[in-house]
Length: 262
Image 1 (tube, rainbow, N blue to C red):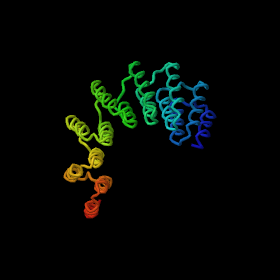
Image 2 (cartoon, one colour):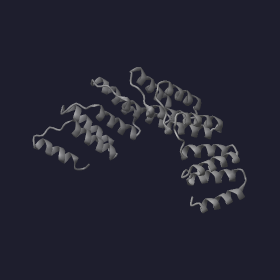
Image 3 (cartoon, one colour):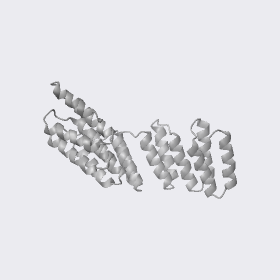
Image 4 (cartoon, rainbow, N blue to C red):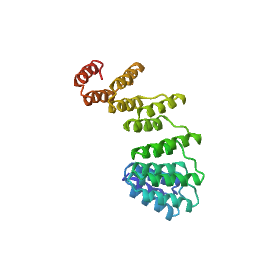
């Protein structure tokens, strides 16, 4: 990136006019290189210099950069400026900021932006909903996350494996393994196959409740399905045995795992 301005200078010396792709590439490069302030300066020069008008892709790249360094206020300001400059933000523009707000536990601000997004007729996608569901689950608002999942389906936006895993993991951490199993049933109905992360969460939930027989059944199911058990799966079961004061079984399990190359 340290050579980029030299190359840009050569553009002008040769009488070539950089276009939106040129500036978009430079801004994207600075964002990837964690030089977001430099990317913002290039964007400002692009706008003020009148070389060319930025498009949604350029703005989304810079929004991603601001969110990457946790500067959500600048990202929201740019979102507002996009409309003032005559081109509308898209799903990516909103989803990027919503994801950043949700990860920063600013879930209420994220929900407000989500409401604004819908009000403006911009359709949220599975990434938008998953970010919000994750954010709600992270702060213990699981019921609201479940309602949002139901609303998501009502809008014909269907959850993917990541969305379901977020909800299953949170329910299991709260000890609500029965509810988590209900979510898994919905996964099967939608022809989404649970993966190692799904089953690890359920097994961990049973271990937290001290229901080791049920945890073992999940582990055996994973083994039966083939190539699903990993080191985390084994650690969850060993931890469960230890917490239930069954150290001998934990040790026997450890020996068995070694024998199976886990």
